[in-house]
Length: 367
Ligand SMILES: [Zn+2]
Ligand SMILES: [Zn+2]
Ligand SMILES: [Zn+2]
Image (cartoon, rainbow, N blue to C red):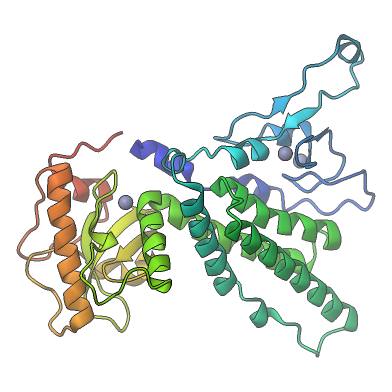
C-alpha cells in the first residue's frame, strides 16, 4: 500500500460531524435524524440499513464509495419532489467490502479476532463501571445516566457477539456499530445532553483503538492470532516456536529503543507517526500490546536501534525481546535487502520516512 494512501485510510470521518456541534437541537422534530449530522428533516433513507441522511450528508463521505441509488422510474423523474431512494448508503457499502486494501484478503475469522480485541480494548478504556451514576445528583439525571450506561452495555454485548460469530466483514462495519451507540443516544437524549458528551468521548476512544489496527493490519492481526493461540494453549510459551513479532509483513518497520516509564530501554517497531507528529503507534518486542504514545511524553526517549544494548540493567524478558528484535532484522534482510544498524544508538529525528530509508536503504518507499 502506498504511503500516501495509508494516511487517508485513517478513520477521519468524524471531523465533519464535529464542525456542526454548534448547532443546537431544533425544538421541533421533523422526522428521523440524519445519521451524519443528527439534524432531522432528512431526505434519503438507506433501504439496506434504514439510516436517514440529508442530500448533502449522504454524499459527504470523503474517501468512501458513493451511495448506490435506485434508478428513477420515468414517472418519479417527472415529479421533482420524489427523492431517488438510496439502495445502499456509503456505510453499508464499506461494511460489506472494506476500503482498506490490507484487510481485503484477511480471513474472516482472523479479522473477527482482531475486532474482538478492539472491542475488549474499547471496553477497558471506556469502562462502564467507572461511569456509574453517583447518588448525589438529581433523580432524573441519575436515571438518565443509568439508561445511557445500559444502552452502551447492551451495545457492547451485541458487538462482542457479532465478533465471536465472525459476523464482521470490515473495520468500517465495526466502527459503524459504535457510531450507532452515539446515534441512539442522540435520538434519546438530544445533542446538548450530558450523555452525548460522554458518548462523544467513547467515539474518540474507538477511533484511536481502531486506528491502531490501521497502522499495520498485518502486524496487528499476526499479534492477535499469537495472543489467542497462547491463551488457548496452542503455543507453549516455553517452547522455542517461531515468534510472530520476528516475521516481516509487506513493509519494513523502523526498529527503535523506547524508554517507557518504569521500563528499561526496550526494542520496538515504530509502526506509525501521525501527521502532526504528536502521537506514535509502536509495538514492543516480546510484548502483547500496541502502544499509542504521546511524543511530548516519550519523544526524547526514542532512539534508533543499535547493536550496542542501550539498557544497562536487564532481565530475561528484555533478553528475549532483544533476541526477537535481532531475528526480525535478519528476516527483514531477507525480505527487504540491506539493513543498517549503527553500533551506537542514534537520535530519532522525528522523520519516519527518512529514518526508514537509512535503516533499509534498498527498500523503495512508495509515494
Ligand atoms: Zn445531515
Ligand atoms: Zn445503509
Ligand atoms: Zn507490519
